Image 1 (cartoon, helix red, strand yellow):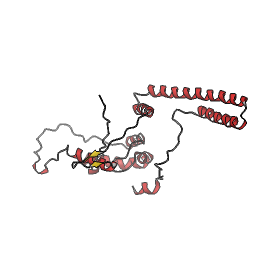
Image 2 (tube, rainbow, N blue to C red):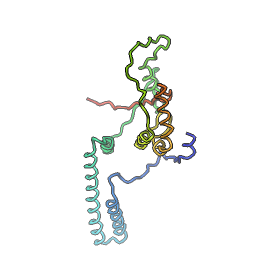
Image 3 (tube, rainbow, N blue to C red):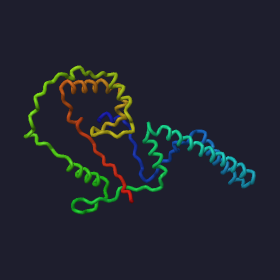
Image 4 (tube, rainbow, N blue to C red):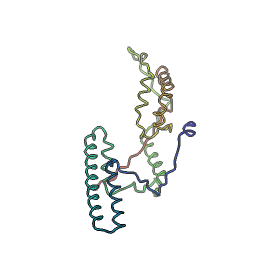
Length: 228
């Protein structure tokens, strides 16, 4: 984490100003048609001549037709790959929805209204925590005597395989409790493959997992109520 803080660049995002990015369906050809349309319109505003307006209308119609064609091709590609990449499909569908609903205020055990997002998360965390029970370590039952015929002593972790898995990490995923982003693991895969292989092999040989590997981040996903 010290190396990440020292070498990974960071930037502050202004929440009050939206970043303008071109749509995912827009290609260079469509972008050039739109720029040409804007240029023709500026020319018509300057001259106010009929021939310039007709030229603008011609370019505008071409840009509109190319835009619709690009959107159709993009949607066809999403539909074709919907089984392999359902996230992209639902992201596109949600972008077309006109309504945006967030999570409403919650109430704690005392009936007080909770509107802060962090307090909402803590409230859910406390609730989920009550759904689990802690085993009494003092009264654990004895392990049954079983005749073991097969052992996992022949499992060996290979550095090249660990490297291959690191290079296939999905960088858009969020980091876990260790706060190490998958992008860092992927970019540093060549340097991390060796130490991680040693850790995995030691864990297998000793029959134990590090306590940090048993931790997880539980994220409640809000599902809005559906009116019937």
